[in-house]
Image (cartoon, rainbow, N blue to C red):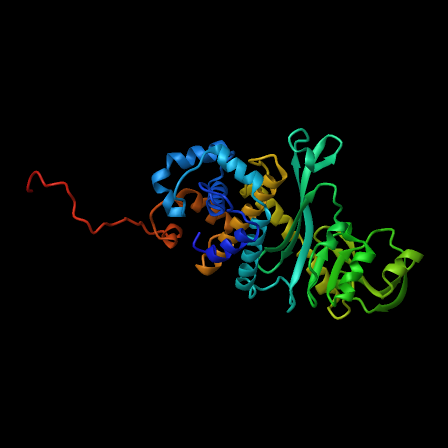
Length: 378
């Protein structure tokens, strides 16, 4: 918790008046409670409060000074704006981005590369009617822009399940000179043209019914899997209106999967094989979604209100980022999974944090003389 910037935390709270007329449970206490639930894998608010009361003398190790009732924490999750914790997550993202800026990419590329995708978290229709997804099911959707350097989520948009993936392109920030890698669900040439206007690059899988005219074919090294490297213009009235500039079309054969892929990009400088390798790195966002669903509490929610759900998700993301920052700052060689498992057992123990990740035994010593007298001299 020392990696949490308390002054800037207070600024975020004051921005939305989170602590106005609050006497017992501040937003910082709420964050500590919910972060404790993430680190120790609590299943419900009742489970969380019961555990906090059982270890009350040790809570100060994590910065928690007192315990609140279950109803008080439930009201805080429902009524205090989730934007407070979204802003705090944004602060942690910037910090993690700086720490992982030197992490090498899986391909030879100097620019920043992002993977864009979404994942669905299923909910019960009767308990979460505000997140209607299908006729008998509710869901929330996490649209995530993942920085491939260090697997840091740089942008997250939480919506109900009805928001199409291509519509999420209206929300993501576009930085000039960066690469955004997407699946074919994001093909919308009006929205993809934003990348061209912003001097940014995209790599996206093409659909089978793509209509185009070939302008030029570059030499292709078929031994490396590149079947063709073409410069094309879109065909069709609406496509030419929405994206009038030329595109690059690359056909690639993956020998491992025995599949053919067709990529579209607005970058004409990178080698065709590098474009294919960049798209292959998109699988990292799939692993990220799988990891957070397995190791963070974002599938079972502590409240049914929209504000409570978003609060829990943003605090879970912030907890993930705090662990990632600690891993880099302390130069830990352990994986994120190992770190979370160790923290789940040692979060309230009195020991240096580095000691928890070493193989040396630690014994807390005290300078105070013992009150117990020696009964026999041996």
